[in-house]
Structures are given as structure tokens and as C-alpha cells.
Amino acid sequence: MSSNKSVREQLERQYGKGCMFKKSGMEKKIEKKRVIKTYKKFLQEKRYTRKMIRKYEKMMTFHHLRHRSEGGKTNTENGAVVNGLAHIYMHSLPREQEEYINNELRRYKRQIDECNVVLVDDLDIPYTIVPMEFSIDDRKKGYDRNAKKREDKELIREYEEGER
Image 1 (cartoon, rainbow, N blue to C red):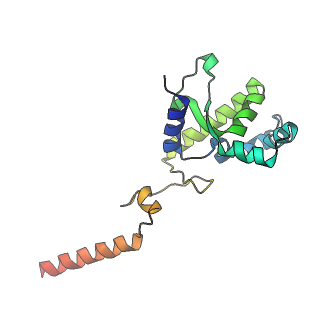
Image 2: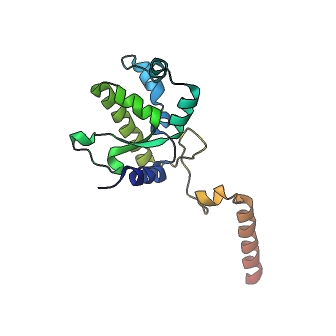
Image 3: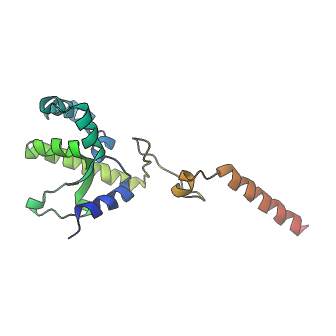
């Protein structure tokens, strides 16, 4: 059986860092549904201070989409990365309401898997990256796309000159 931490790290590599609850737009979906206590209302009821909210929202945890007590395993298929406060919120809800959120998180993961979407840590929205000559790591290091184009043009020019 895998530990929650190692599986959470796998999920972060696969789906990007950050809270899936927030990235999936769950707060807005819940507000539209109007039958589940909203995240904002939960925060008001519990009287969390801003400092506590910031602390819990930075702390990422592994959430079992199917509870371990119901036979849910600790693996990437059965998990989601959520912040500590969202995790507390979800477990404060009645089971059927939590299951609605779990189904939405499953749908979010499935959409990313089906579309080959790459999540960028700085943005809250997913977007598709067309495969190119350089990787995400190159971009983070400040890879110069124009330098690659210049190198390609030089190689073509050298090749054409060699044929003459």
C-alpha cells in the first residue's frame, strides 16, 4: 500500500501542483447547485482567521475519492490533491454531497487525461500545449524559442551552401 504523500506527489506530477478543488472550479459549481453548503459559508461558520485560511490553503493533502473505510485504495486513480481547508470542508458535508464533489473531481481528472492537457503551476486554468522541440523544464529555465529558430535557419543555410 502506498503512502498518501508519495501518491500525492505522483498526482502533482501528473496533474500539476495546486488544489484540484480550486482548479476544477468547484466553488462556483457548488454555488450554482444551491443544495450544498458553500465553501464561503463553511469558512464563516467555522470562523477561520485569515492567517489560518492562508496556512490551510497552502497545505496540500491527499483526498480519497472513495473512502478507505469503503475499500478505497491509496492510488492515483482514487485520489485528488486538495488543500487542507477544502479537505476539512468536504469531510464536513453529508456523504451524498461529498460524493457529488468527488464525482466532479473524477470528471476533472478524466477531462485532463482525455485531452492531454498540461497544467501550468502559475495559472488556475488548464491549457493544451502543442508538442514542440523543447520541454516545459526548458521553458522554466528561460529557453529562448527564437534562438532555436535562428539555429535552425543557420543549419539550413549551411546545408544549402554545402550543396552548391
